[in-house]
Length: 560
Image 1 (cartoon, rainbow, N blue to C red):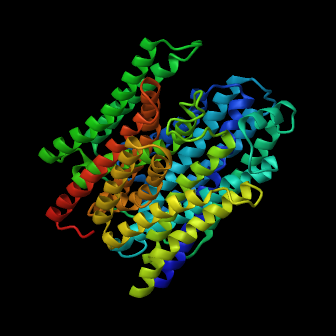
Image 2: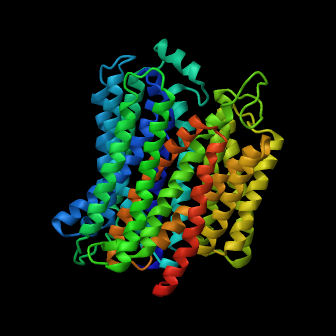
Image 3: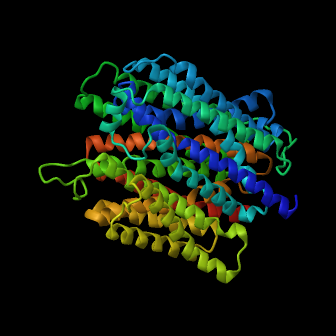
């Protein structure tokens, strides 16, 4: 393809990434609605996240297992373009199923919620297929050396959709972008918000998926990127993943069963739950290292897993997604828990209500958008001087977008205090320094931002007040740039195993479904602030991965 066609194809790909971010953001509206409407507890509400990230794992695993059975790589045979189209159609089916499974449901019918989870799982299965195809697709649209920059661009567009999605969806459905749990409960009780509203939302979501699928299918600018290379079975990798799946399902299945009919959990039950969560976590880590060790001795039967950069990258994706999700998911509890007679939370800050928590959570996720916008600057090939200027200007423009979005929530009044703006501006300045030091090298970028992530979490753990709060919030800034670096390095040099390797990496998004519950249970047993040692451990592995993958790729003579 010509360079101009590549840019046109990338623009089309970015459009769909925006749809994914925008639509996925509606979950932040849907989850609290379900909690109130279906009369479920906090743990049950978290099953939405478990279904979402579990679907990524199951979807990618099914793609791999079926490919093994038919002895050809299904995604290679379809082509990346068709893979995205089929994924969008699958997500549309899940969105449309939401209507019949909730039709006629009344308040308090908890059983209907589990049917909703099935529909939601199908939506996420489509996401799994889309992600498996879209990430290597973006890398393939140009020089592999700049693949991470294209992933940053698509990720930045996705984050923009995620940033504005909750505000727009809340305005459309509830007539306001700011509401507390109590206000939502009252509106539902008074039938001001009914299930019909949410049904209309998902019918609209399904239509958007169909539009995106049509955009891809009929676009002449997008290459199919098919491969007719022979498929080599990877029986050892398949068997290992199936065993891992059984262990994880067994652990979580037993944990779920302990909640059935239990009003209050005893200390013994809590310890059992924590132990099983760690068993699932250790099983993932042990499986990866077992595959790496065994494949290095005898590569037969391991498929893409015979490449150490891919196997180590699987655990890197697992820990990256886990730390990204767990910092944000536990942030609300961090800002609320520990409030006593002093009126101060766990960080020694004034007590916050639900509506006040939202701006900090949006600031964390907005930090991901900031980093991805900056990481995408290189895609446009600016001059050296302009690029330096953009590295400084773009993050603060993105910060301005976050402030504006939050002002919409707050009736066009600035939500953040001057001190808060200064604190986060300093965090952004640290991130900018990291970009200048990294010089667009994915390995250096991973090293620097993993180290900054470690330092940020340690400062948050060992301090209090705004210093601790913004140290934890900085995690979003430092996580932002990691996905494209890890993904690009992990599939470097895989050749015909690229799509298989991509499926393995997407499986490891499972980290978002395992690491946050582990941290949450650590918070139950110990304290919410000390539970952030889990985030430190994740960043430590990512730092190790950056050093180790450089050694591996240099030894293979692979460019990155």
